[in-house]
Amino acid sequence: MGAITKVFNSIFADLSPRGREVIVGRFGLSGPNSEPQTLAALGNKYGITRERVRQIEAAGLNLLKQKIATNKDCQAILSKGKKSLESVGGVISEDILLKQLNSGDDSITKNQLALLLESSKNFHFHDEDQNYRSFYFQDRKNLDNLNKFVAQLVKFLKPQKEAVLAGNYENFFVKFIKAEKINENSARNFVAISKKVFSNPYSDTGLAEWPEIKPQNIRDRIYLVLKKSAEPLHFEQITSLINEVKFDKKVALAPTVHNELIKDNRFVLVGRGIYGLTEKGFKPGTVQEVIKRILKQNGPMNTKQISLAVQKERILKQNTILVNLQNRKFFERLGDGTYQIREA
Image 1 (cartoon, helix red, strand yellow):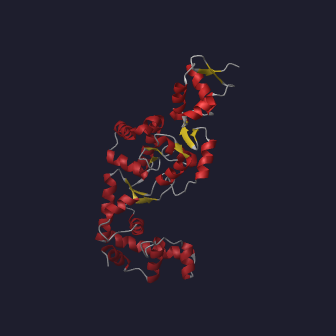
Image 2 (tube, rainbow, N blue to C red):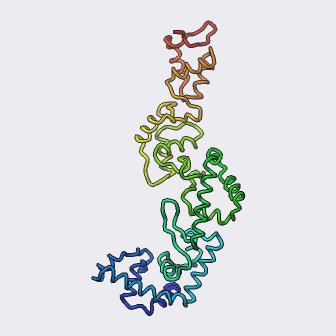
Image 3 (cartoon, helix red, strand yellow):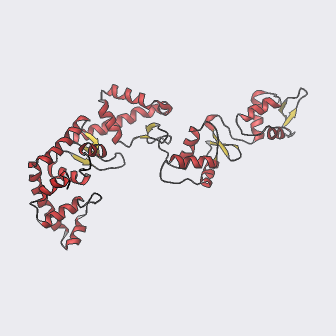
């Protein structure tokens, strides 16, 4: 029997059998994977009302409060937890605190700690929500400090989006905490708890609201894969990369990826099923439209010059480019062998 189990058996010793069963059920203490049960569930199990379950629980907690207050092992656990909190600004993630409290195979569980806290109020637990991962905190002031820090950091980073996305998050983070005179350990701890700051599978860190950091849909994932690629990619390659990177549990399908590539003007078809990003200099249009634009910008050019210019934007064989140049409706060959746009 582990030391933690002995500790809880000791503080449960004076509980009635029913009181023990209710406390174990309400806090999910019957096993490592047990979940807390509702008043209604326990009432149905024992054939009593929810109010009666609540009364039994209250009486049990009142007795446990006295036991925990005088049990040196319980107090040692709570004291260690409180010291951990104090060292990082009064707020710490659930995972980190449990790791710090545990040693070897004899580990206190989240539910066991919840019972100690319910009976002692030494510090408090905040469940996971849309803004934070689950964490423990000392008091309301520490909670307010966390909220204030995150709000200020988000406000500071928003105008710096392009610079942050260029790989400068760490520089901006250090600059921010120095300006705000915030302890670095506390600041990094706050960031670890917050869901507002996120690191993508490419190890880019920034605000979770930025699609380049936390893609929200298939188009965002396509965009990020193409942005990270040094060259345009076939839609099947894009699909494979999305699934390899594993942005989430969803599996990308090639037909879906292809449809999104066609619909979004950020993506340009540059070859057979091959797409690039407009922000990387690729412009939409047929081969003839690309040639016309190049000739309009540069004036008459020879076939080699035209081919090189087109191949910067399209993955095409030279013969394909030359075939398009032969369209006399759009282009004319001059006496010196160069081509220009045919005047209407």
